[in-house]
Image 1 (cartoon, one colour):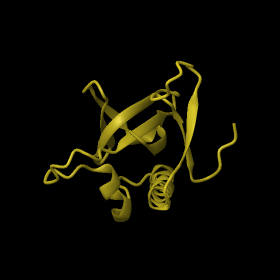
Image 2: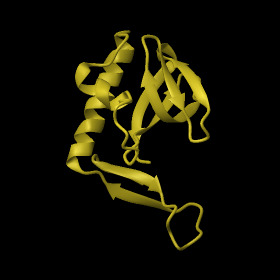
Image 3: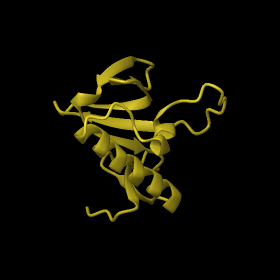
Length: 123
């Protein structure tokens, strides 16, 4: 299936049909798409140039704000490692690694140099 820029392919878990292969193509709104694109470009630059932190404009997208009590819009990330392992969950950034918390509550330290892709996914 070809998916154009600005669209996401999601597993359709709300379908009335129990077809395990069913997917749904959802148009990403322009604001979210711009945010994803900026974060993706900054992540590539951070990884390729061995920076220790993201750009200030994208740093807020991957760090949690302790003063924000709103849990309605939790951002979920998918991290792909060089060894092809894939993790997803919420993340916090430190100098050398990301601390990922998956949906079961497990905390995983992931070294920045082991990451080949960091992307925002819809919860």
